[in-house]
Structures are given as C-alpha cells and as structure tokens.
Length: 82
Image (tube, rainbow, N blue to C red; front, side, top):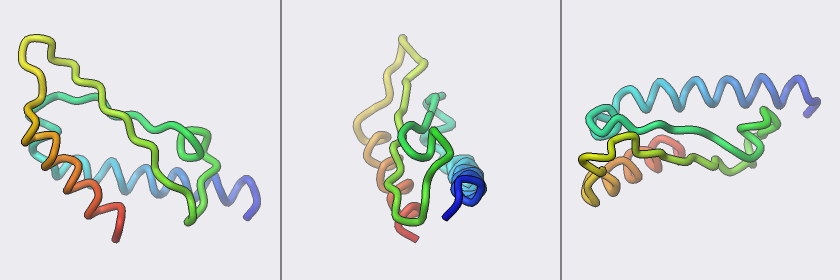
C-alpha cells in the first residue's frame, strides 16, 4: 500500500467507527471524548493495523460506571471484529 492508500483506508475506517459510535447509547449518555492514536492517528493504517482508541471522561461530577464501560467496550469490539 502506498501512503495515499493508507490515508484513504484510515479515513474510511475512522468514519465507520464514528458512525458506529453514534449508535452506542452509553457513549452518548456519558459524554466521553474518544480519540485515536498510532497508525490510525497518523492516517497510516492498513487492514492489519490494530485500533488504539482512548476514552476521556469529561464528566467530573459523575464518572462513567463500570457497567457502562463494559457495554461500550463490548459494542466497540463487536464492530471492530466485523
């Protein structure tokens, strides 16, 4: 893959992740900020790249519950594995 192909692949995959995230109610409810790093963050990913997602809890008065964290992780893993 050329660098332009990696960029296109990364951007397409990030868009799909963003679309999937919009469907996860626990993410919306908890107002989490999500960002990617690594090859996706640099727009250098390929189909063999892992996805490094980080979640920043923006609510200081009510942190995200453990069950919501598990549900978010489970739903994102289901999406990423497909």
